[in-house]
Image 1 (cartoon, rainbow, N blue to C red):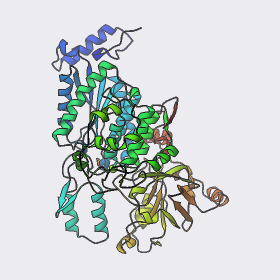
Image 2 (image 1 turned 45 degrees about the horizontal axis):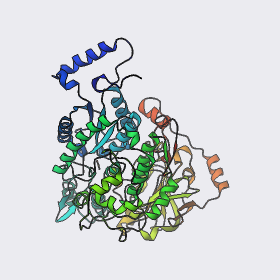
Image 3 (image 1 turned 180 degrees about the vertical axis):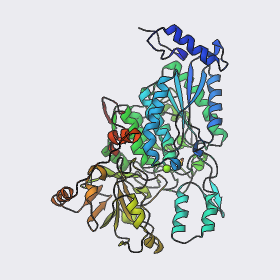
Length: 573
Ligand code: FES
Ligand code: MG
């Protein structure tokens, strides 16, 4: 057997003279002033996703410094390196379009450069899933460091935070309840510091999921970005990475079916973002595991929503942190968890819950017998409109609309919607169902968060706060409403959604987990012959790669060639 290559010797090329390759490597790195002694240590790579375009990662320099300190304290050699960074507001056409690119960048740079373990620093929505996907494929000991949430701000005495309140204030402005002056005042307060969105949006969801997966140090999900706690987590993460390298604690020992089951429980119990499902599916796919949507739905029926955070509840991430963070939640969820799942600490999740000790009185994480919502936040819908499934975040929906039949008001794509949604001539009532097509993985492309279709202006002015909305797109985790998402297969590849017309009747029954288009199969077949769908393509570049290989929501919107070659099972088992 070949001796295991570590440190700078890792991945030396097999062609030519290996001794010379190492000699060259050392010569070059010594240009940065390293001594031979330093270069004998195990190397911990630190993925730097700091960027002026990404204020959610605005604390990256402090985090890297603390991780390096942790690595040095534990006897390793820290090496930070950049990958691309993705911010929600600065990623056209959509951040999701770039997630797989970031995962490839992460995977390949982890593979290409010699490192015995890697610390992944991410936070903004797509970055943590991209990093976990990439690390899962690269296979070395890996640990996630979350950048942490932003602080909340204050507007005229009211506490505000991105971005549930962004939507709320913009909604007020659209309904002409507040002035242009006030809406620009609140704009200064919504993001009060660097860090990720302060509600249970996708970033917070993925932070909690990363901890539930066992991929962060205990307590790694909740400290806000600018706190001493966050910096201490960073230091601990660095030290932990060195130990993982020594122990050969590779990512496949952590990302097991039990870990994904725990992540699904946590996703449901925190009233997490629906995006979490797509990301978990993609990460699991890298390990050869399929997320079983029907099992997720069954788990949903037995998992209460316990976390009282916006948009389902009232608090913010910093409150969750003050309430003890994930330890408090996991303690409450314990009877539902797979306690044998391994974590980055080398201990099981069950052992870590024990070590976290007793809880204390607080009002952010409810007890299982007094939940925010008796069932999990997310329900999986099926029916002739979504043969491959669709989802609804019931904890953020209007209870009155969860059993509803109505007339379809159809928008063919985002532009069509933008042009007509605010028109006084739009034929729409609060009982109708808004349908938006062509915002799926290939449709937009990149499955944008356009599923949060705004309330048509004339209804908003009349005081309508919610209406049933259906699309093949995603929705920001910070949004709320009776919104059916991820309709699979999508319209752009000829899913039934493509053939819905104005005036068709649609029935939504969350109780029966059903989304039905009340149009006969024959009529749908006739419509598809009359106006066949042209599947989008691109001539060159990343767009071509994307459109040629992206999978549907039920496969995580990953590229087909990035998923594991052999799918080894379903999770939960
Ligand atoms: Fe980065 Fe919300 S925009 S987490
Ligand atoms: Mg978001």
